[in-house]
Length: 188
Length: 142
Image 1 (tube, rainbow over the protein chains, first blue to last red):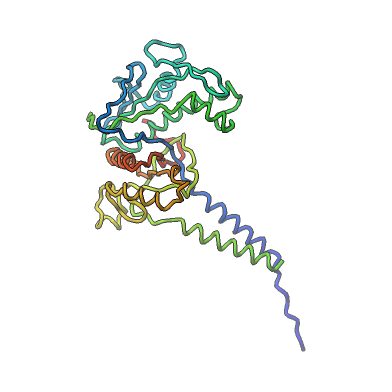
Image 2: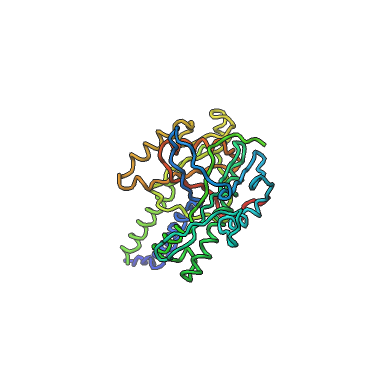
């Protein structure tokens, strides 16, 4: 007596394999690297001296080996760093002890006062990487907030949502003005 | 219908293999610091990694307990970084070379002296685009 072999129901198989596929697609994307991007200055020719910068245009942030902060030779806290940096770079009231501004012609924005301020970051060899990154993080936050403010005021959108040309214009108006000192042992 | 699930299975195996292949074994322990302003690292094929941290317990006999640098899959010295950058550069097509980013993956307990040394070497090597790896989070406010 010939018996019919029952057919396997394979309809659900493609569903299951789709599910697995979607899972692996997601998993392979999860470990994206996050972090803070920076640009290093090109190496200085040995005979060339560092450019002369006026004192009002520099905001010195020092971190010692115990991860303590000094802003312009005064003790400071990391919570205050963002606001201090914004105040310094923005100089909203044109105070004489905060950086000068230079009117610059920028495409899409017209004439903008670009701050000549530079944040000078100095760290000890004993500073922990964690603290260093927190400082960089706060400075990034300050610059990002200023860019957002300008972007909303001029283009009505956040900095992350503007077009490529507008982004370039804002980057020119508010540059990442962070200078890192040549490594020394400042002790503390 | 029958061939469709075959194709899906093939894709599935492809992605399974890819996900395991990307992991290169680390010899150093890295807990990245946290930051709130972190951004994504773009164009992964143009990134070379420098890992810095304390060697893992099973490697400590060989490499000690002080933070070390791992380039590709071997523990190296600071002075090897210039050569490493040259190699990484020559491995990429010429049109892409200006866009190579060097990602510094360092443990949060690493001292800045070591990171500064790495940065000086990178400046000498002309690898000026760098990226400090950090994970998304609130960070540690003191």
